[in-house]
Every structure is written in structure tokens, then in C-alpha cells.
Length: 135
Length: 127
Image (cartoon, rainbow over the protein chains, first blue to last red):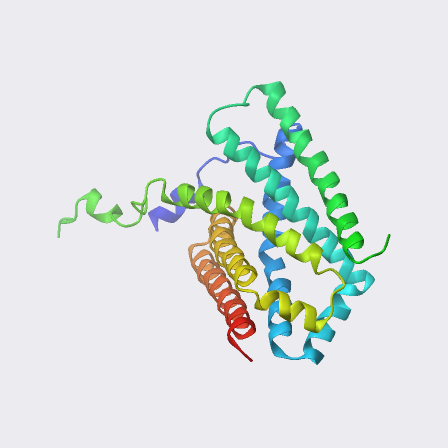
């Protein structure tokens, strides 16, 4: 019982509501959110693989979902989440070595993550439609 | 009756899991592998955009593609399980709830992995 009261009385360090939102902080939050989204996104990948392994009918159901406007919206979000998490991950690997951690540099790196992820997402989708022969 | 257990005896097993930087390191190792694997995954999907049943099956039946997809799935699941563990431990403070969620998360990752690998095996080895 004494353990419980000790835990309840523990002071909370200042967090989100106290600090002004800055790019590195925002990218940190987005990194976690995209990670969480990708976690559940694996269900889509598993569905696609299972459908392809099952039957043409099952595959067509999956394919028509992914081809619908809603499915495409989700896949677009999935692409962006993957690329943002990928770039954010590379950023963290660089930081793990101790480099590029100066205030201005890390902020620039945060901007590069968001801008780079959007540009790469658009490029992936342009390439996707090109592979489909849309141009 | 006087307390026989020392304070150290009481906290043993409740604190650090004695794995040191193990969690951190596994996140890093899987993330390095995932840089390559996720780029392959994206390229693979781009090349298959709009493809029908037969084309997709033929592409996934290729040994190299199946191996890369299998690795992407397995390493990805290992990575995301570690990540979700961190999220759960950060936000869920009730001990019981936390344990249940950690176990469910592991079950989820294993289930998605087993189903995906089974599908890939079926596609490559026959059927």
C-alpha cells in the first residue's frame, strides 16, 4: 500500500502544455504517431499477402478496397507514415553518433524530415502511377 | 515478528530487467536493416501497382522477392513490437493494464508475422 501512495505523490515534470512547440519536438511526436500507425498498417500488408495466397476472389476484394478512393487515401497515408518514420529513424541514427545535434542544425534536420517525407511520398506515388502506365 | 527481508530483497526483480541497453540496441539494429528492406518494399509495391492476381502471385513467388518480403515482415514486426512496448510503458501506468497490453501487443505481432509468413510460403512453395 505504501508503494501506491508514494507513486501517487510523485511530482510530474512539466511537459506538453508547458513548453512552446518547436520543430524537433513536433517531429518527435510525429515519429511516434507514424510508428503507431505503421504498427496497425501491417494488418493491411498481411491482408494483401493472405489474399494473394488464398484465391482470386479474395485478392479481388482486397484489390478493390486498395483501389477505392478510401483505400488509396489510407495507402497514401501509409506511404507518408513509412517515409516519415524512415527519415526520422535515419535522423535518430545520425544523432546516436553524437553529430548534428546543435540547436540550429537539429531544427534544420527536423524541417528536412517533414519536407523530405512529403516530397518522397509524392515521388513514390508518381512512380506508382507511371508503373501503371498512367502517363 | 521483525521484518526478516532486507530492502534489497524486496525490490529485486521489480526494477531494471538487467538487460541494460538491450532494448535500445535492438531498436537500432532492426532500424538499420529496415532502411534497406522498406525501400525494397516500396519499390516492389510501385512495380506492382495496378497489377492483377496472376502478376502479383508470380512476383511474390520469386525467391528473392519472397525472402525480402519475409525479412521486411519479420524485422518490421520485431521493430514495431519494441516501439509499441515503449509507447505502452510511457503512457499506461496501471500495472495490470500495462502487462495485458504488452502481452496483447506481442500476440498481435506474432499473429501478423505467422499469417504473413504462411502466406508467403504458400505463394512460393506451392499452392
